[in-house]
Image (cartoon, rainbow, N blue to C red; front, side):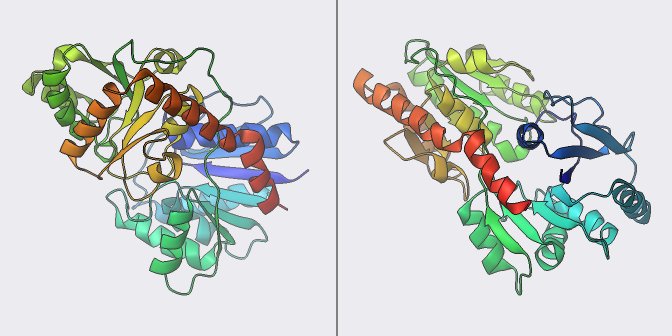
Length: 358
């Protein structure tokens, strides 16, 4: 039985990275892999449900200064890896390679970097750029979420030694129990309320929507550091009565089932799981065409619409286009979205992971 360990920031967080790590780990565990997950900080109470056979560890109980304790992190991590005799160590997020590459130095453990961010987005820290450089030079394999991101790694880093493979995020199940329609007049958006997710841009677009289609509502599911700022922006734009901030939800299915379409307003994306989740409910999507992600999931005019990245006016126009769709146009996009989601089933995606663990 092969022993695989995933290294993540904090398994208790509620984001897409934590969710997809849980999904892949559960599927591998069902295939009789010996799976462990260690969080850099906390993570002992996972937000998403884990298979009971998966072992959970935490390197630090609470956050410390990793700049001041850099060598301590590397030392702890190396001792942990040596004491568990893993076959493969998967780093969930390239920034953590600044710890894992020295920690694994000289050990016969396959080292995989699993990148969840768009290569063009370092999320505000140059340490991620350094982590990517080290990963490209020293890891055995780098897994990106899209073919576009794979190309960005190969063209922007010289003399890449790692094998770079694109494996998209999976979905666990298809959920189309009832036919969605435009009758609810609800637009849904799900994600962490942080700057990169672009909810401020969505609110700016919604101001125009609210003036033209006052009967429509916007539901935002998720929490984060920008929530108060977004609530203040909604009040400033005088659209607070047409928006619901619903916070983090363990079960988002009720919202997918009862909305008319999904909107994604991110400035950057890797491979947005929320779009696949929306498609499993047969939801058409309106999204910014950011560098990687949406264009690999959405075919404009077939299962949704793509707006120019960061262009609030174009996002507004495309949402209005969706709202004004005929019943036949909407049904076509809904069915196409559902069919597209099928190709990302966990049973198919996990086989790619099994292959790289051989």
